Amino acid sequence: MAGPIHWDRVKFIPDYDSKGWWEATKRREYVVNQCNKCGNKWFPPLPACNRCQSTDVGWFKTQGKGFIYSYVVVVQPIFAHFVDAVPYVVAVIELPDANNPGHYATRIAAVLRDDEDKVAIGLPVEVDWEETPDPEIVIPFWKVSGTADNTWKFPG
Amino acid sequence: MGALTDKYCIVGVGETIHSRNSGKTQLGMAVEAVNNALKDAGMRADEVDGMTSYNVMGDSTTTPHIATALGMRLNYAVDVHGGGSSGEMLVANAIGLIEAGYAKTIVVWRSMNGRTFRRIGGQAVGGAARVAEAAGGDIQFQAQWGWSTPAQRFGMTCMRHMRDYGTTSRQLGAIAVAHRYHATLNPKAIMKTPITIEDHQNSRWVSKPFHLLDCCQETDVAVALIITSRERAYDLDQPPVYIMGGTARTMTDLPAWNYSRERIHKVGGFYGRNRLFGMAGIQHKDADFISCYDAFTFTTMIQLEAYGWCEVGEGGPFVETGRLQIDHELPCNLSGGHLSEGYSHGIQMVVENVRQLRWRADDYCPGAAEGHHTYDRSKGCRQLRNPYVCVGMGWGSETTSSSLILRR
Image 1 (cartoon, each protein chain N blue to C red):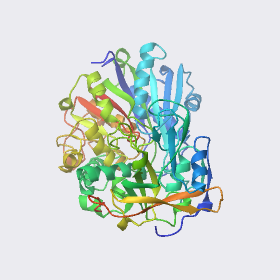
Image 2: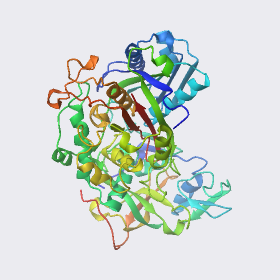
Image 3: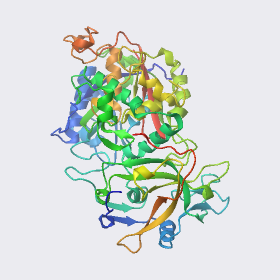
Image 4: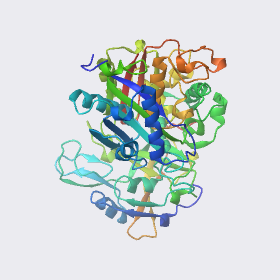
C-alpha cells in the first residue's frame, strides 16, 4: 500500500444485519454469522441460515486466522478514500475455523497490509486492526503471517 | 424444443451512435434508438403496445417518458433494475407476455450515458472517485476493502482460475485482439485500430490481473429491439429472425456474494446451458457464430467454459488459437463487442446478431443495406457467409447469466 487510506472521506453506517459485526470489531474480534439452530456459519452478515433457513442468527468469534483464496491488485482507484493507497491488494480469505464441512466454506474479503510482492494464494494471514477518526468504526485489516507450501503468485 | 421455439421474432433493431459524449439526455437517446428500430422494422409507433427496459440504479430514463415523448399508449410498461444479462431476460419476458395476451408487440430498450453521466464503479463525471456514504448493505463492506468495480470483483474470480488451471493474461489477450479486429470492420465502433497480443500485454494495469485492454469501453449509447409474433413478422420489412430459446438470469447458488461457493469460477451459464440448448433444440456444432458478454476478456472466456464450448479449465488454450476471430472456427462478437464497439450492458450484441442473421451487417460494403457483401475483410466487410444460427451469452456477474439463441 503506497499511502494512507483517508477514512475521513467515508462514513460507515451499520445496518440491522451488520450491527453485531461492527460492535465486535470495536472489541478487536473478527466474527461471522452463526445459525443458532444448526451451527452453520457464513459471511457477509445476512439475516437467515443458508442451510436450514432459520432466522435465529447469532455470531461466531473466529480466531482471526485464515489463508488467501484469491486476490487482486487495485492499481486504478475508484473510492475517494483509497486514492493515495494504490496499488493495494484485496484478498478473499478462507477462515478454516468457520468452515462448514459438507456445506460451504466461509470466506471473507479484506484489504491487506502487505504489498503485492509479499502476497500469494495459499499464504496464511491474520487479522490486524485500524482505528478511524470515527470512534465507532474500527476496520479489520489482514496481513501475511507466515509461509506455506504450494502457494501461487500472479506472474504479471 | 421449447413450446414457443420459433413462434416469436425480433423484427426491428436500432441504436444511437456509440460515443464518449452523446450531448443528449438518456431520454433523447432512447427516443432515437426506438425510432430507428421502428424504421428498421417498417412499423409505426402506434403499432407497439408494450415497452420494457433495464437500468443500473437509475442511470437511464423510463418507459413512460419515452411513451410520452413519442405519443404511444401502452398495455405493458416495466423498467427493471439490472445491467448485463438483462436484455436477453427482457426478450424472454416479452415472449411470455405476448403469448399470454398481455401485449402484441414489445420494445426492449436500454439507454445510458455511461461516460458522461454515471461511470462504471459510480464515479461522478469529472471527479476522481466517489465520496462514499457507506450506508448498510454491500457497500459498507466494499468501502472497507476498496473493492467495488467489476474489474476489481471479476478479477478475483479470474485470478483463482489462473491459479487452478494455469490460464494466462496472454491467452486472454487473444480475445481482445479478435474482438478488436471485428471492430476494424465496423464503422460504428469506438475503437477501430487493430491491436496485437503485445499491445495487450503492454497496456497499463487497471486492476491485476486485468490490463486496460482486458476492459470494455465507457460509452454513451441507446439500443432498442422489437419483438412480435411470427405471423406479424411476415408483413414487416426485414427477414424475420426467430427466437429459438434462451435463459433469463439463471443464477448460481449464493448469487449475491461470489465468495464461498465451492468454485467461484463455476459461473451462472453452467446452470443455464442445458436449458438453453434443450429449449432451442440445437447443439453447439449447429451455431454459425456466437456472442459472449465481453465486459472483460475474462468474462467471454469463462462463459465459453460454462456454456460447454470447451471443458472446465480449458478456456485459456481454447481462445488463444484465435478461433473467436471472423473466418475462424467460432466467430464471436462480430461488431467488436463491449471491448471495442462500445458498451450497452449486452443488448448491442443482440442487434449485431440479428443483422448478421439477416445477412445485412452494417459494414463498409457499399451495398450492405441491401445485403450485398464482398466478404473481403481487407475491404471492410464483416458479414459472415450465410449464417443461420447464433448463440448469444449474456453475463450479469459470475453468478448471473442470460442467453438467447436466434436463427434466420
